[in-house]
Length: 262
Image 1 (cartoon, rainbow, N blue to C red):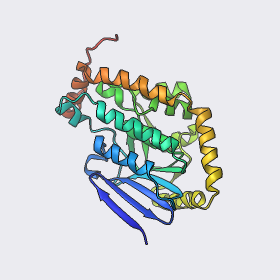
Image 2 (cartoon, one colour; image 1 turned 45 degrees about the vertical axis):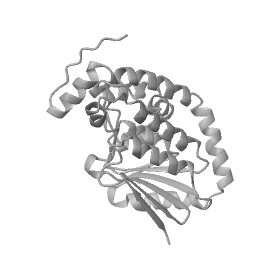
Image 3 (cartoon, helix red, strand yellow; image 1 turned 60 degrees about the horizontal axis):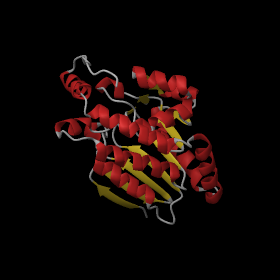
Image 4 (cartoon, rainbow, N blue to C red; image 1 turned 120 degrees about the vertical axis):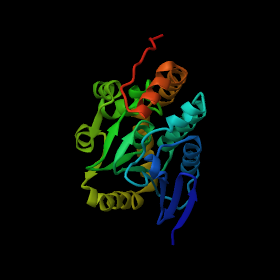
């Protein structure tokens, strides 16, 4: 028998050695706040001894639309607690000895991209897309995206996605090596089940050491990238462009940015 625990914006399900963490706020396309990110990090950091795989997913039609920036803007918050919680979660996902699979069934934007790529394997629906939309609201990528995206698809494509805020389709993400599997929407769950079963039945010690070695080779600067992003993002959150970006988004009009570099 499985075990399910429901929290605000998060559902945790354990069954057959698989711990499934579902961001559960479909009305916001699973936008995440500090509390949700903290709960996710805690769930990743404290696996049950019988857990063999972690699955990270979102409820409804989206994986994650990013951080709840409206709440940050409305509260005149510095954004530091949310940013710190996201950074902790990314580190927990990459450092966990368990293999982590992220399941992307639809929109995956902002910090959602960082969370998806912090997993070891990304399985996506053909209907999914990835978007580093930070620039549209006067912000920069965070949650380790500057390291995670570049490590996956290279500097040039990472800059294209971050600077132009372009959508990357699941098919293109597969061709670039950003995701491990892409399936038609109606076949997504069966493909996820196959991948998870392979990992759950694999040699746990060997998988853990393999993951650690590859992450050490490809993401040695992730902690430094998180600190660089933190400093830059906190400055941008205090700027006028962020307020203008959120306001323009709410009013469905183009933003007029006025902040200057420096």
